[in-house]
Length: 530
Image 1 (spheres, rainbow, N blue to C red):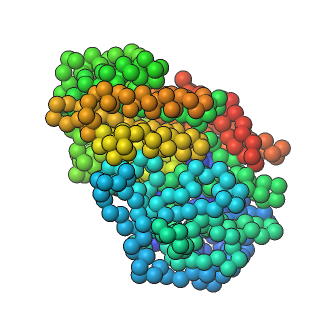
Image 2: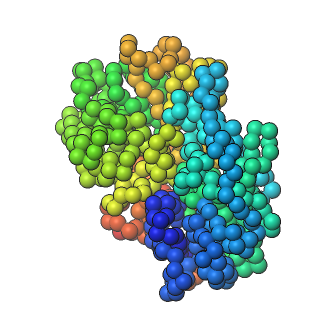
Image 3: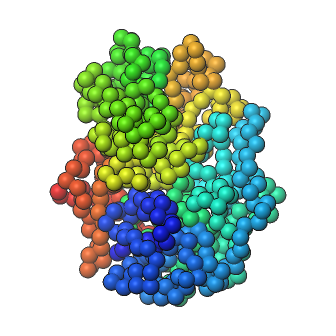
């Protein structure tokens, strides 16, 4: 029950991002990585192999691996002859491809989107449960920063987040294509090549769909696809057992904390906890402190939003470390109910790798980030271990922002927020969203508090009509994510799933049980004994 990740030296960054994504679904223990070499798997026989940008020099390796019931996932640029072996014909991107990702921002649109989109087919088992069947390469709801639907940007610039090459299928089956607004196919984006004793799934991007709910295709391919014939490995669901979905809400408090009281009272009346991410250097007024204590006393959470709300947590590691430490120290000293403070929301959702290291070194166990505008490596399809940080730190991406300007662009409607929740529900993903307190100087586009309360109430009514939804506060949510990230799965000789922890520091209090899916069956796990 193993996954091997193979790559060339120049693709180490991509490999780190992909490896972390695999770990967030399939647990840490099963992922091993190797640089391409003729003997790279001579002493290791994985069930599933992921290859990043494999070239013609890897043809013999690919042919040797694509047998004995294995599954292969190819990401990014393929060598011409290797592509032919898997039923594709590839070439370099045409010069006009640069325009595919172009977005014209206009306040007259309900949202702004690229001229080209990924379109998935309806006639394949791997796409049957996809929540996002049609998605623009880029989509913006607020300037060029936020995408309410949550997915990342597919570029056309030759980088690791880019479409890699032109491709058409000769024998492979295309399961997704890039199309223009007229519906014309521009290139294949994903394809599958089935053989009697193996299957090969390819994405036309070096990191695949790690920053989108489309990642469910990878989970389905590895755990369920052709389960009677080929190797399958289990993955850990993001929704806890006993629930149909999960949702958490927060306010990012970088001003006028006390003005959030009407929203707090609405959520309290509806039985949904509200969490506050606080900029601690404001400083808070007595009325702000009272609301913070009331939130904590009524099932909510208070976490860090930095000390002074600087971009990137500060200009370098030292500044970011001081921001993180000072904010945590203030919260623990002034709000004993919030102790210990282990989680933060990144200002502007900006997370340069040095800032993530600083958060870890400051004693944080996790952070909320993820945004289409910047730091794509931290926009995560699945919550869990963050990439590019040696110490384990978890993250959850929450890109959906309630904003008055967006609400008005949508025609005074919460429909896009409902659409985003529905996509997350279908993808079995925790849905997180945010709003802000507002002051006399800035109201985040809302015409009035009553307008905002009406929008939130309408959205919550929609959510509550969709089955048994888990409503954790943000700390409870991130504790569950951390618990999920610490699980280690294996299959015993009797083909039964075995679970254990790979750390003694597992959050078990107030966290619902985990569940695992394998060969089409979902199993609830009892917490393993430490």
